[in-house]
Structure formats: structure tokens, C-alpha cells
Image 1 (spheres, helix red, strand yellow):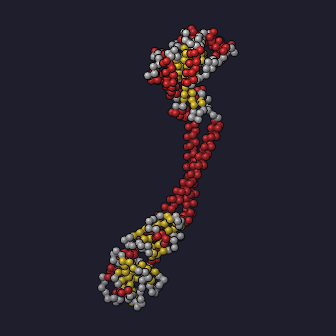
Image 2 (cartoon, rainbow, N blue to C red; image 1 turned 135 degrees about the vertical axis):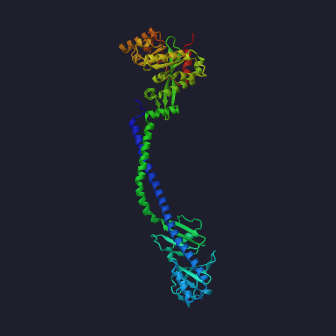
Image 3 (tube, rainbow, N blue to C red; image 1 turned 90 degrees about the vertical axis):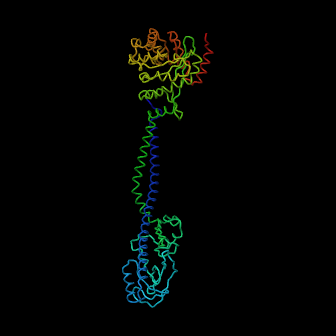
Length: 530
């Protein structure tokens, strides 16, 4: 079974990660939502304030335009000053406008008559006047003698003054807490509904922004041609209610997003930690390496080769043995790239040693899919290219399962042997092979499975099976290799039965390439070539 660690611990780990990620995502989502709601609400409110300023600005522009037309008309009227016709003309013009409250005739700054009749009192401006680009004079704020509390805005041209009520510029609903102010372009305040909005005119840079120093949302528009600017502010605290309402509406969305992200993350983690996904990842990362178990000639004790055994070391250092991943690799087809990596590593690591000693061979295990695919010859040819190795030094080991279809198996074996490779049937005796079956396959050697070698000296029945396998191999003229030799009595038995080669812990455990080189050197010194 493909299990590296306790599956319960892995599930717990995934759930912990998922729960942590869910909480983190929810926190981040709420924080982002909170920030987004604040920003969007503030921008929306800022636009609303800008719309209010535009409404006021439109009224100011219309009032100035009406004043210009009225003053121009009276300047060209040529009527007797303060005559009934003159006064009637002024009155008619005022009644025809929306924003002009009164038209005054005041030569030499002395009010003589108004649109409502003659006047004998004095008229004085409360602030100095500015000459505009169009030649008119802006009387910034004036008060009338009959109503000194009422402040008006006046435009003066020649002998005439057009007076406008400042309150008519704000004849639209103003939300609670919102302050508006009208000023000239040089910052002289003309109208204000509150004390805080005046301060905005002291900042000439930011035309429409929030003012964090006063915790307000603000907007400002300007019309240099008509010499006015308007500012609107609202305490940012008034947005709290709207923000909270939007936040409560956004929380389900944030929760849904966090659950979705967490679910996808858990799914990804499960898939990534799933055996098949981990196997694919290991192939991509080249986490597989090769150990070499010496194969010894039983006639003289000399090492004649090695079997390449694949191992998997994960990035955390965990070592995975073949019986834990090979079955899954064979079922999924991932055994093919694993075989490629084993062949390439074996040629790279032992190639020079095999070239130096032509009596050595390397045995490589291949799977059913390797045999059936017909790709093995190309893979081997590519691996041997420029190595100097003889093909006879490469032994191909395949299990009985690889040869279930005797006819197809024979074709593949013939092709391999014709190319110069030796072919060995591995784990013999564990499948369905018999003498008639083996007679159909042109094999070079037969490897006796460890399960039968273990019974030597312990189980008479199974020892007889091992003896029978040896007899079959001899009858077919095959060399024999015993695997899993661990005890001296097994060695004595195998030598007595004429087995050619053996491997197992009695001789050596699987070794790294460096350890195998040392082992071979020591073996050669103990068993010199005659």
C-alpha cells in the first residue's frame, strides 16, 4: 500500500492548514472589504459633495450672467435718471430675473433710486470692489440701509448696481452636517454655512479631496472666468453608518470568498499530497536515485556485477522503498520515466567502471509497460551512446508478469537479445511460469525469488520448489541467480545445487556508487583473477 506516513496525521495536518487558511482568508477578506467599503463610500460621498458644489456653481454662473445682461441693458437705456420710466424699466428687468433682488442707480456712489423707487439715504459698500476681466466691478458684500442684516452680492458697472441674495445660490436641499462656502478666486469669503468649510480655501493645492487633518470629506470646484470657487465639506464621522451597513452586506461575500479560497487550497493540498501527485512531482524533481547490490559468482566469490535498485528520497529526507511506490507507478504508467531515470543514472555512475572491467555487468529492472511499449531499445541505445559500454554488459530483468503473453514477450525478448542485451526473468516462481512456458522464451538467465531462498533449511516443501526451479533452469541451459541470500546455510545449499550467482545481505546490502566501488576493490583483493 502506498502510504508514507500515518494518513490520519496527514488528514489532520490538511484540516489544520485549511482551518488556518480559512481564518486568515476571512480576516484578510474582512480587512480588504472594510478598506474597500471605506474608500468607495468616501469616493461616492465626495462625488455627492461635488454635485452639490456644481449645483451651487450653476446658480452663481446664472446669477452673474443675468447681472451682466441687466447692467448692459440699463447702461444703454438712456432714460432720465430716477424718472418713472427709468424706475419702471429697472423694476421690469428685476422681475424678469431669478437671482437679481434689486437694481440700484447710484452715480458717484450715492444711491439715488432703486428698482422699487427713489431713495434719499446714503449707500456704502462694506468691502472693497474688484474689477473683473469683463470690466464689471464685483462688490463683494453689501448691506442695504433698510435691511442691514441682509447680505447681498453686488455687481457694479457704471452708475448701476445689481444686487443678489446670497441665499438664492443655495435654494436646494442640503444634507445635514454638510457645509458650503462661496469665495472669490483670491480666497475672500462671500458666503458660508459653517465655520469648518472656510479653512479649505487656505489649501490651494488640493482641489477635491478628503482632509485627514480635520476628518472631513471635501470637494471644491472653481470658475476663474467668473471669479468664484465653491467648497463643500462633510464630517467623515457621518459616513460611519453607511459604511457599517455596507460592511454587513459585504461580510457574507467575504465569508464566501474565504471559504472558496480555503476549499480550493485544501483540494490543492490533498491533490498535491496524494500519492500519485507526489509521484509525479518526484519524477519532475528527479528525487529518485540508484543503489547497487553486488552480484557474486558462487564458484569463486568474485563480484561479477550489480543490480540497480531504485530508491526515492523526498525533499524532507524521507526514504521511500520500492514496494511502496512501484505498484502505483506501474498502474499509472509513471514507471516509464522512472525506468528512464534509473537507466540514465546507472550508465552515468557505473559506466566508467564497467568500461574498465568488461567482466562486470549491470542488471536493470524493467516493467510490463516498458516491455509492452517497445520503447526500451530506443531508451537503452540513447543511454549507452558515447559510454563505451558493451551491450552484453547490460542485463534486462523483467518479472513473470512482463511475459504473460508468451508470443508478444518472445518478440520483445528476441529484439533485445539480437541487439546484444541479456534478458533475465526476475522473481521466478511467484507467477504462473512452467517448463513449457519457459521453453518458448529465449532467456539468458533465471532469478530465483527470495521467498523460495528463505525456505532453505526451514521448509522442506518450499525448498523442494527452489530445487525444482534450479532443475528447470539447468534443463533449459539458463544461468541461475539466487536473490535474498542472507544465511550461510543458504549459500552452502546453493553452491551444492550448482547455482551460478547470488545476491543478498550475506554478501552486501544495496550500496551507493562510491560504496560499490570500494566493495568491488575489496572483493577483487580477496578474490583475485586466476
